[in-house]
Image 1 (cartoon, rainbow, N blue to C red):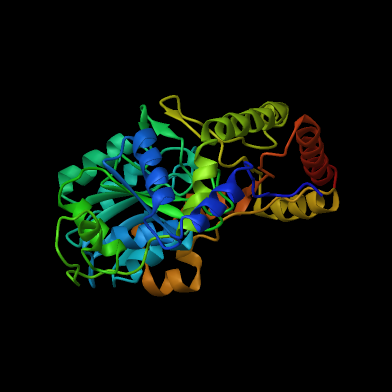
Image 2: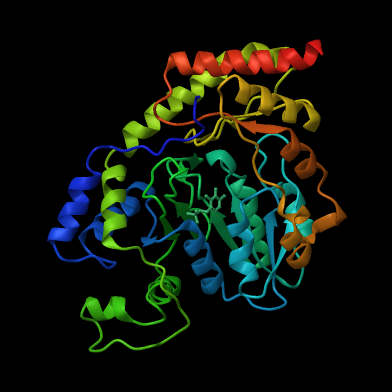
Length: 382
Ligand SMILES: *Cc1c(COP(=O)(O)O)cnc(C)c1O
């Protein structure tokens, strides 16, 4: 069986974890947290990177920083992971779901202006498959309407939009190091803060249970106290040590992953030219991190048969998000802009994700491509 995902070890994880234990600092904000944060700040050029225990936590911090509450509306795609919406619904705000673009499957920026109303407080751009949303248009809209722009960059570490690292273009960016992402720590994430204005100090306070402990540790205040709303969003040093081992190999992981992605892309060229499948589109002004390789099939019905045939042939492929607006909690907590999301409904029902991890070599890519060919051929012949 060719697995869909395989958590990757760089080899240094246990050594760093042992060092963290030897240093007798296992709670958060020790040496490894600092190393990982400095690495992220250097690589992304964000004013500040704060490690969190998940991207979900970083999104919840964004909702707290945005100060959203009951009656506020947040514009986002429906074709995303539940955490994008939950973070804001937990504060009492309402997701307003806007349709996606047919090429990148990202939030359709051309439909966002129409969805902005007096209650809109933020736009959340989700960079699907690590491919950037149209950030110039979204930034202009956010500025013009005085709303925040937040990036769910869970899948996007290492990707850029017009040379700007994803997660650093909006006011805040949320990264994930979940074991299914490119660089991992089991569970893990980070919040990137674009400028070090007043958001930065509040972000530190929110992450440290609503206390000014971070400034206390810097020696800037003589005691630490409860000063604002907050929770516990920082990871332990054991998690940060694992992450540090991964970050040090991030360049090599990115190269390896791009090669696998390109290998798939080339192998599906003929099927795409014949109109049997549609391959991912990468706009010219972005670079991506090969987080995912997906194909769009011709019908939802075909997808079910292709997925089961692939399983029979030893290839573990998957569908992806059930659009939030059609899920029970989405119906309860959200609202659909314009009454319907035809592209979200259509594209989400036709998409399959192929195995993507660092152990895939040419032989595995050949096997996956042959299995997909057989699976779609089978349907065509039926
Ligand atoms: C993975 C993912 C998340 C959640 O990340 P966690 O680190 O598991 O909390 C959120 N949004 C998107 C788009 C994701 O892909």
